[in-house]
Image (cartoon, rainbow over all chains, first blue to last red; front, side, top):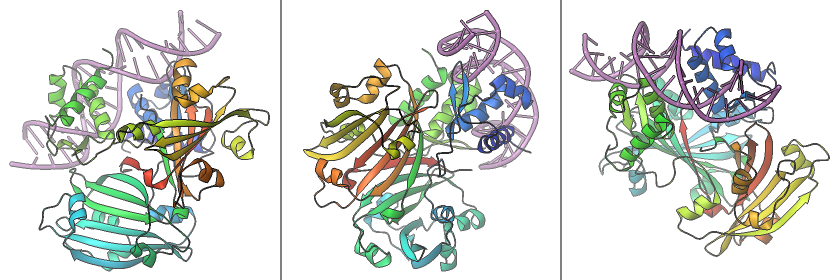
Length: 237
Length: 237
DNA sequence: CAGTGGTCTAGACCACCGA
DNA sequence: CGGTGGTCTAGACCACTGT
């Protein structure tokens, strides 16, 4: 079993989720945990810092680690807005329609977003995601061609990420998200069910590879009533 | 000077921001940095992990730490939506109007949000924030009375947080944010400039104290065209 | 293979909290 | 005051990367 601090982290998460360690109580001290798990204190601290970052506990100097009441959090603690997650969370069968799949010469905006040269090509993928019989999300992906030589409709109907990571061995390492609210374009109105809606929530996603190169720009355009974003933020200082 | 790893962190941040260490290049290795800063490797790693969490570098096993191109990021890497930040970022003079300040018996919704007993009182503060002559944000704060015995209009017109931290010695430790889009209420229409807008972006904020008790619930209601949220997220695994 | 970052250890000193 | 978490050290072994 690799990663001692991760197993300790998971162990404590389970104890908190099951209610074995109730909210507002103190965790055993770092020295006690060190003995319990037969490890060093720094390793315990690594596990506790993870718990703290993920909103399970609050560390207080001189007192101990307080378990936070997560029962109020009906949503995942971290703030990811993935279509599949949203769908499965609501117990619905997601359906994806590929509207467009083409290799294009990017316009100025996309070229700037992806920091490309004037002769680089990009894949353009437009997909609508349907839930409960309504088209509520429009995903527009722009993927650098130099990293992804081929792309098919079958792959897009499933999951692009899965293909990139499993088959192409590309490692997506991090992403920067930006959320803004915009008026729907005509394309939005045509491809989504927007009767009676005057805005769309746009999540602009900049995806980076393992070596810190930018390789994909994605716009996920949501119907506002089906959108929710959760952020669990520590204070700065 | 306290905190060795923080000074190292700041030192490297400066070097990245100034361009002394250009994007896409490798930082010196942890062992080299250890010698440069005359410290231990774990301390260097603490500083580097901070840099990584804040989006300045990307660590790759077996290779080194790559400096990320932050020049594209025209605003703060972390995703805080504070009125004052937004205003100063846009070079505008913010103006705050206190519409309501009262000590009330909370209705069911607020009592539930704040997990209060039936006889607890809360401060209700309603403020509009004005920028460029337009009222674009409506802030509704509900603060537990048991933590904050007194509150004046002067305090609310300035900054509630400053008062709590400096004068009352309460330490705000973390907050959970939730972003949704709603149709404007009549109150929104009356208190904000919403001509031609059909939605408001609502940021629900649950604020916790140092000892992990929930003490404030805030709704920040934004005009959609003046709203923007940035999230810098590491991949899960 | 040598060099990188990832994990883990055992010990030390400090600042803070509560009794 | 003893116990807590916060910082720092010097050293070890590992998995991974390039050549």
